Image: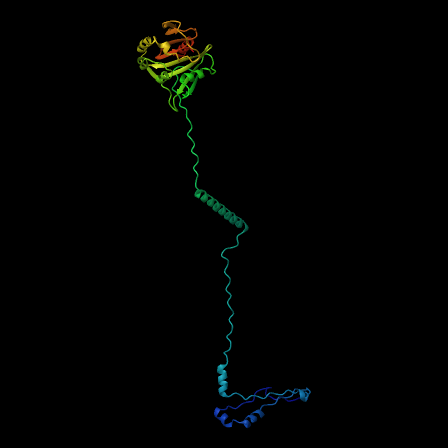
Length: 334
């Protein structure tokens, strides 16, 4: 069957009259509260539902007294304000990376640059320690020994031999040793004698070392440019002296005076053979290629003492062959 529902909404609160604090205080009491409680509308039973057993019926809680005006005002004041609509948080886009990804090729270049920098740093460190390390000066090398050269030869010669004087041997002994060495026949070997590392014996020193007493007037007419030579012939080595002269006429005169003792004075001018006693008491004349030669005979025909002056050159020799070959070289015949 149809049940007419009340026009009032279900569980709607009854209309309350507006009270003042004064009225509430005057009429406050249990009766007033009971009266207000009776006026609370009862809930309507639901349609076509069997009533629940008595033991299961819910017990309605007692209604609390309605708050007064002041309480409503206080409650309204204490009620938290409605929440503000939430503003969606602005999302700041993340900043782009400071550098873009490097392609593989650039990565390789960067790696090579880094390796190069490491190598340069390592090399710089090595150089730094090499500079910092005490430098040991290299050993001082002695300067190369430069053998001085004698003056130009006065005649065409075949060989020049430089010999240094020795404190243990005399010049005559050195010449004897040199005369024993192999030398082609009819050749001239010039012997240059060093008295120290750079100076050669002068002509006066040659005479002094061979113990040849030269008259001062003869020595005054001789220049310093001279050649001491060894001539090789079939019967042995013969020693000769060639020197530039200052005045050939004056020198011839002085040599004529010296002939009296010249053979004895040149006793150390024979390195290969002993000259022996003279075969002629005085010097004799000889002519070769129109050139006058003064000589003295010795026991051996291949051994003599002779001299001549040609083209301002004084030649003193110990054999006829030496003298003839010297003249040929000066005249340009050989």
